[in-house]
Amino acid sequence: MGLISELKLAVPWGHIAAKAWGSHQAAPVLCLHGWLDNANSFDRLIPLLPKDFNYVAMDFGGHGLSSHYSPGFPYHYQNFVSEVRRVAAALKWNRFSLLGHSFGGAVGGMEMDNLLTYKRRAIEHVLQVEASRKPEQVVSPGEMLQRLLKKNSHAGEECGKHLLQRGTTQVATGVWLNRDRRITWAEHCLDFVSRELFMHYIKNLQARVLLVKATEGYYALRREDDADKETVMFVVSSLKSVLKERFQYFEVPGNHYIHMNQPQQVARVISSFLQNKEGSPASL
Image (cartoon, rainbow, N blue to C red; front, side):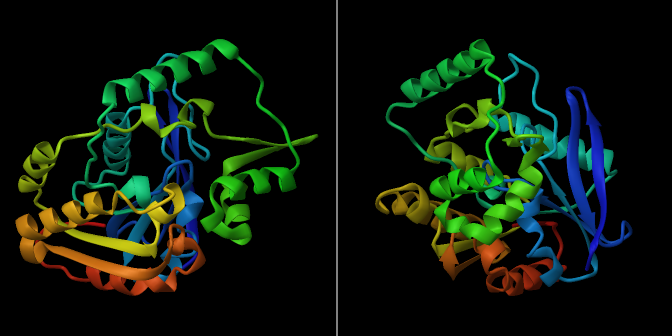
């Protein structure tokens, strides 16, 4: 299943870039990439999924080929949710499935002891970036790849190059990153909710949910240890207890970028979930 088209959807601050596979008449699936990634994240997975769906992978604002937010306009989690709604409206989708990786597929929340300090640092960072007005740093493609791999060792060289195809712009002296420098820190985009509020959210959830966790995934990449595993288990157990048969959970061998470097490991369970047409739309 080859790429059908590149899309540019108008929004008040510019445009949301996206790429589409499959027939426009087929059941829609909106694909949401991970933090600091872009729509190329799904290039290797989508060809392995059922052909009778219309897949659209969007670049979140400030990522990939999408417009940056205007100065003074923060990258908050709610804004990304709004972007999903805007894309769905532009495509005239009333019902659709969501396929997300990492940040894009987040369905839970975390608690933090020092939340106010965390948010204050985020605000200070944004103000510093806006005040600095430094030009985009231009480096060689090789150096850019090494920088990406240093921070995302699980991506691997081949997948790293693929992300940078959409994530950089070529200029005479090298390449620069397309993404907005204000999103370098996840702090000023994520919101953290209590477990009580999380339970309230999922009790109102009508969709079916599939959660696929790589055994050497998020915490192995971002943490020195797996001390926060209990939070993940809370999310899983809560979804299972509330959604019952509408929730499926799988662990697969691989790392955080398994959907890129070993897409066949997750394609089977995603395909099976998408083709289960019982009632409500899907959320992956």
